[in-house]
Image (tube, rainbow, N blue to C red):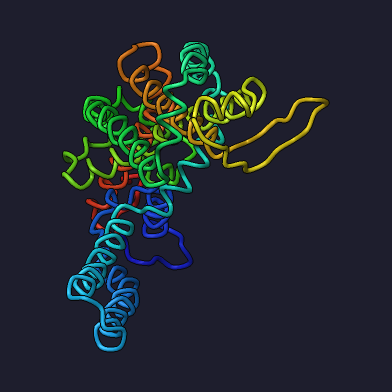
Length: 341
């Protein structure tokens, strides 16, 4: 990592701006010499101590069973591992960057989702008026329903993960100085001296290490996962509203074979619109299924794939160009001007 420069100016100031720019995008592994060990220790130590103290309290005062104490003790290293992963791969800035990126590209995401929604909705309408779907969903407890949705997430995440190496491959190359200058435009790397008339050639960056591949893949997976989530929530909300309008409480009770767990109701004329726990379970199930279907379409269909991945891939191309300029500038002697003169 670059040493602090006076007032953030000059060579060191430019390098620090680039490092902050990379960290803000959830890519701390691209920073030279990034070592999060100190942050992990300072942030996880209080959590681990509290968890271990709770285990001791449970064993000595509350008379927990041995397996209860063992489970409580295991939570301490698990918490440390989670803190390590969160800091090592910039979970907080990654979440913020993905949310900002999603908001910026919301129009294109909705346009992409609009292409998939007609088929998803037709498929879902057939299921939402199906007696067996209501009986199955109503029989699921909260834990079971969460497990089913988690299965959808794991399968969809696996499909997207398999595609990531192919998408990232080749992003770290550019077609000459003009292409590099376009990628660096608007980033702190413009100050590193590889753009403009007479600028020296930027050497190709060293190959990405495993952690850097993982960091880039996580950014791509997270951004695409948010897009799938929008489609899943939209479909689930649609079917919750559709079920309230189209399915009467008497019909729902007939399908489930039991009374409804009424969450909210609205009387419109002679019609009683009911949002029940059973309807919510059906909507969550169909939303999760729609998200999985959308993820499959985005990976296997070339038109979907191009629109699904290209926006984020363009950002990653720029990130890797910034990395190349950053590493090239770091490799120069400290006293040398960034423009190479």
